[in-house]
Image (cartoon, rainbow, N blue to C red; front, side):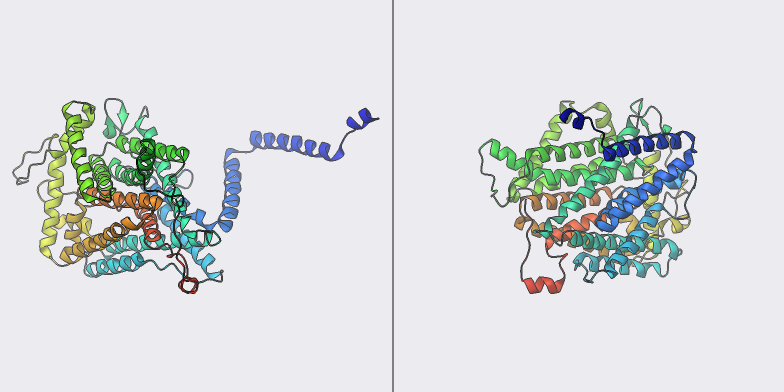
Length: 521
């Protein structure tokens, strides 16, 4: 009897099995006979439904979508999209507009209508207002308005990040730990671009002008140019270095039985997680090298040097680390331990001779150097036309035909030095406003650094590296391109959370509780 019961059919299980087999057969027939366009449409519909459900449940997941799609602007401007071709506006602007709309809907439909009280947003608006003053009398108001909108979008991205993270973590025991959500988004965006760049470097075919070392190609990601791509990777590389450095130091100190100044309330990351972060940092570094961008390399080195300088609490130790680093680089160069291709690339960047461009003979060897000098000379001509407000924010390209020198009649959009470019466009007023803005941002995080816990300190050091790398790279380029300001908004949000762990908490709630939250390790 037991044997009979054991082999007795189960109608419920049998029906499930039959449904599964039938579903598999129908799916196979669907794939075999339905046109490819319908398959892709069906797949896209499924993805959209799943994404919509996730976004309604976790609105913060809209942020990485913007970070991933934003840098596609340069690519789609060149190649367009399959089937639909070129869009009337960049997809990055479309998804950012959708993000703002989505944020407004979620904000209006919730009971708590408060907003994060981020100080940087006020400063961003003040800087944008100064820039707007220079646009009013510019030749192209539209070009100027586009540049002003970038800074407003940067501020909005910061506010949305803070607000969404605040709503996601409102039930957390330690709400300020939501900063690691933003950190993970930075890592995701960096990994996506690093994967694309490394595959381009190793490709068997690519743009002829980007070919290097005989068979490789300069990585350019979706930026279509290696230099801005290299700048983007430099930011994320030094940020990851800053995050990892204090953690590595603690584990080294423990291994050598040295005091590491940590406590049970502030432990280092587990070794497994630290290895993962170091692996991500290494991957970013490989993509940075693959860009073959000297400006990005310089930015990463100076940014990493800033991290090394500010990491020790004793500034003299930081000075010692910088000196030791310079000596080590000198020894490495002297011993020929750096590949000749990289050392030649670095030394060629110093070959700049200032001369009258009208009398200078142009050759393939000096063309790039003379071209850059021509752009600088044109920029100084714009500055002299109006030393206080320049030719108008974002109007370098529009004004260039009236100020070019020599044979360089065509502008490449900017002066290849953001400070000179800003001086030409906004005069003394704009350049001073820009420098004061960034000095304030930098000093804020610098003054907070001694009071931060281990994990916080790593994030702060990473931001210091990013700000220094940005300032350094702007000596030779303009990185406010291809929606780079979206990820900068994320960095601003991280800084705001470090400066004030209560930045996401409504003011009334904060004062009622009379408590401050603290990031744990």
